[in-house]
Image (cartoon, rainbow, N blue to C red):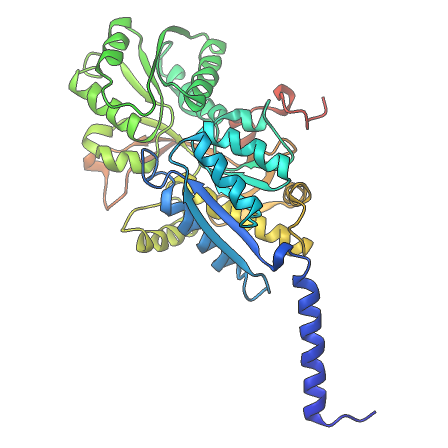
Amino acid sequence: MNFKPQFRKAALAAAFALISTSASAQYSDGVIKLGVLNDMSGLYADITGTGSLWAARKAVEDFGAKAKGLNVEVIGADHQNKPDIGSNIARQWIDIDKVDVILDVGTSSVALAINQIVKDKNKIMLNSGGATSDLTGKACTPNTIHWTYDTVALANGTGKAAIKTGGDTWFFLTADYAFGHALERDVEAVVTSNGGKVVGKVRHPFPGQDFSSFLLQAQASKAKVIGLANAGGDTVNAIKQAAEFGITKGGQSLAGLLVFISDIHSLGLATAQGLLLTESFYWDTNEGTRNFSKAFAAGNKGRMPTMAQAGVYSATMHYLKAVYEMKSDGDGAKVVEKMKALPTDDPLFGKGTVRIDGRKMHDVFLFEVKKPSESKYPWDYYKLRATVPANEAFRPLAQSECYLVKK
């Protein structure tokens, strides 16, 4: 048959529309829906917050989702660091709003609650802000990937470095909830296995304001290292108050076991200089991290991204890659399985993998905070002390309690 040109074009357009409809129909509800759930107004808002929401949306844009025929929607909510609020939001998102993936989360107690919900409903959690290593240990599921860092990596970074420089006696100042407990546990294991000793510990309310009585106990212990097993505003306040008590001038060292660049910005270099910390991302590492960070700053009041926010971008990119190759997003466990099968590669974290236990593997970095005289431009805060390879930073599979790992 010899169709006229206008009829031939119409037939081709109809065929293309039919193919596109068939492909998009494999995505649940015709929409790939991502929900960024974290603290958007409280203690951890600078660490995760609306910056993580921006990062997820930027990943969708940079992946070229629309051009690839993916209808992606990103929403956000504030869990206020409360497991019950976070759980209620997660259930509504999944049951009513048809959210496929919950991103970031932050606050380990909330993360552990969401971890169980996504398993029960066969959805996905890509955790970037929560720290507890239990997410890839005894609490692991086929539906969760722990992306950016965890308490084991922090212990093998900052904790081990402090011991190597003579810090063989420790006192822990710990946030009294799941994250603080896990961080204290994992750092204590590194301290004792490397010949160190824990001479005392105290747990403070979460969130905390007045750390004076706890710091006085730490000072009285004569421990060489005071390990701050807390984060965000708690860490900032503890470091400021420790300076007021003259703790470091008295010869004791502070180990910020989870410190973000936003914390250093709040403290200022005059107070934070010399502090050792472990991060898996720094904005000024290479051209890829700088390009992303400059765009982030333009959209976030001049602030540079934290590693948690960078992790949301990276995790979102890898998720979209997996569902695009599968042409499906309906079965959460199968999508996570695909994410584990595909190598990871993005401009912020470089090449990596996702292990069977859900642990995203990449190098982490031990940084020292610069002196004010060493900083040459805004947010020029870190100097690299050591690179910790992924297989040394994170828990070995041979030591895993995750039931997905075949011993």
